[in-house]
Length: 255
Ligand code: SAH
Image (tube, rainbow, N blue to C red):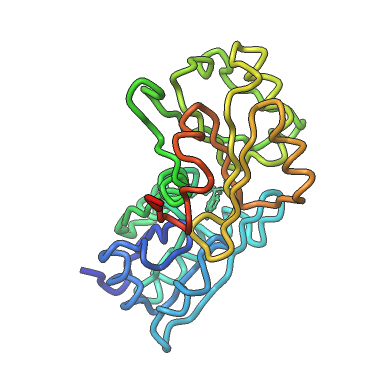
């Protein structure tokens, strides 16, 4: 139950409102105030009750409209005004969403919070793009990892743990670092012809999928002028289905 003076950290999934959980839907319907990120789709925002105050806190890479400390404080301030505070985030709040930090801050301020899982981009966007994350004899493991560049422009990752040919690797926030990712994975032992895909705005009506391989994906991204939010998927699973079989978002045609 959503009680006044509490916060609900709710995962809104990758964009398509049909991918909201019923629990997320219930919390959304009860909110007095919604503090939301850029990745929450307009269709989902339209589900908020008419009395609900909406506060946008941004969250583009390197363009945080409200810095994290400010977001934490906003949540506390609104909860102290005895409201039902909805913290609405793209995907899952606990997967590259800083939801854990927000929950820690809330508890430190004696405010209870609900955590409502959402469908994380790596799972939803790949399914909708017809790419299974694991596939018998093709991919036995799957890693979700951040490609967010460090302040010095470097990307310091444990590359040697990503070199199994039967491992799918999904990069969040990886567009800018794609050249480094491709170079380092090849240096770590992945073949340069390993299939690679980029999914932009997965699950949205204007979802884009670009397929290539480690050696070619960067040039394709430049050619198509791809911007965030995009997910990069690397591994043989990318070619499980032919492009012609994916007729629509999440629809594999038998013809
Ligand atoms: N908490 C979110 C992730 C936030 S980090 C989740 O669980 O999905 C932001 C990154 O998520 C983006 O840079 C992009 O890599 C990925 N992302 C989120 N939504 C996406 C979407 N609809 N399509 C493609 N990538 C998406």
